[in-house]
Each structure stands twice: as C-alpha cells, then as structure tokens.
Image (cartoon, rainbow, N blue to C red; front, top):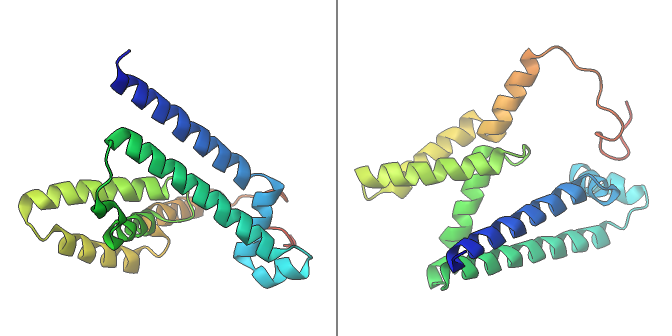
Length: 177
C-alpha cells in the first residue's frame, strides 16, 4: 500500500475509535451526569455531584479530541497555515453545528455538508459567498430553532404514534416520570 493509502486508513481508524469513545462516554454514567448538568446544573449539584469536577473532565476530554483532530489534520495536510487558527475557522464550525442542530447525532454532519456544498456552489456564482451563506444561516436559525435535522426529527416524531415515556436510562438524572 502507498503512503497516502496508509494515511487514509490510519485516519479512518483514529476517527472511528474517537467516535466509539464519544458514543461510550455519552452512554456511561459519567455521560448521564453530564446530561444532568447540562439540563439543570443546580439540580445536579444539589444531588451531590461535583459539577466543577465533571465540567473539568469534560473540558479535558474535549481538548484531547480537538488535539487528535489537529494531529490528524497535520498528518493529512503536512502543513498548517495561519488560516487554520483564524477566528472565521471556529465560526464556520459553529455555523455548521447550528445549521444541522446540536442535539441530533447527524446534525453537525449535515450542517457541515450543507455549508461546504453552499460554499462551493455559491462561490462559483459570486465572490461574496460568505454573505449569501450568512443570510441562509439567519433564515435557517429563525425558521428551524433546533437546526435542520433537529426540526425534522421533531416533526417526524410528532407524526409517529405516541410513544411510551422514555425509559429511565434515557431520561436525565433526577427526573421523574
């Protein structure tokens, strides 16, 4: 296998392992506590959880995953220019996440795909692709409060037959039926 193929295979393995780690963390007791902190920090603290410690661990895990992503970027690109640390790069990631929706698993992925497709299609039409993307972003945020995927999931969920209450493992800690 050529070096480029090994790089792609290694990247795929690392990203898959990172996604499996995230999936496992979210479904662990630690992840349930993080959900409880997100939903109602005062309640989680009153239940006896060390909220500050859990937030610190979550920030450390987030930094580790960001570091892994940066390492993969450098390995694949071979060079990191200053545009990678420009404020617009992180702004683009926020736009991708908000467009797709933060809650659903596919939200950020669909948001990223939408921004990339819009950027490529609109940049062929005009040099002001950022302005057009911004207008579309504002319209989507006003029309779809949960993002595109989140709003679609909510709409499809309302059409489905009424489901039973979520099992205890699906509810945030400290909530009653």
